[in-house]
Image 1: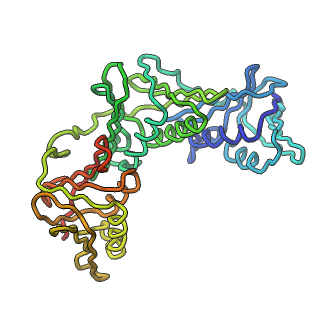
Image 2: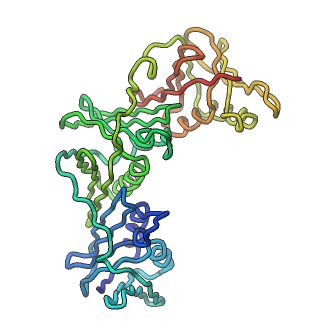
Image 3: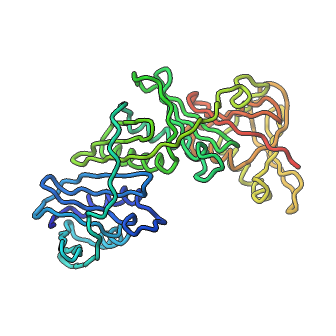
Length: 377
């Protein structure tokens, strides 16, 4: 194997590929990149056995061949090369990869490509096209509400579903839930898939990379057990595949989980709200980030209650509609939501201090965030 490739282009695909390399593998080969040079260019693969990526990169191929090498080491070396191009060659007998530039020469001991794991076949049962911008936005608006470790596997994934021409993203850890619903123009039959959070964040990065290179469409293919994402970025082809999480996602649209009628509506400036919560959070960061919110005629009072560190209150202007009330809530959950919304004003839709409340961006009706109130013990 012998090729010449642009260093900058190689760095771009390495950054994407590293996200799919196993971090705690007992098999050394799962910590490797698979490289294969063929007449059309270079093929890069990586996997942790749950998610997979394959990237086709055009380059000058002098001799065909294949090898696997440690992904992290390869990445670290390429990042040090300052020249515009790098030559990569492989001694197939010794399984040694050599990286050469005008100033540098590195040898990396590899493992034979024949020992690399096989990638699953791409599912072809169902296909749809999604705008890369829509996909990236959808993931960003829900993934923070999902934990990667949970007693219930379905709560470690993002629900991706199509319903009534909308593409819907949902994430929850059972204490809070985020839903983003956007018209997509999808004409295929309705579906509901639970995709691991780690996969969704990886595909989000691929979508953002595609957007930065003016690639507007992401092709999604799925079966009962697998989902694949395919995108053409200029002269490169990227294919990422992942296992799906099996199980039933919570029926979150029920009234007791996502209420539709409220007794009080609070409208506040999101930046003032975030600053106020951070102030009070100094006292409550060790006790579930608990804060108390109480409405007055034209403001809300945010307080800590009595803690072993002391007590604090602050208030900010607000427009209040409906019944006066007071409720406890995890302040970090609110600031997480504020970081994501694009508008300047935040809405609290509240029933009472016991039932779930819904936060919304005043300027975005497609985005809902449900949070359970806290009881100060």
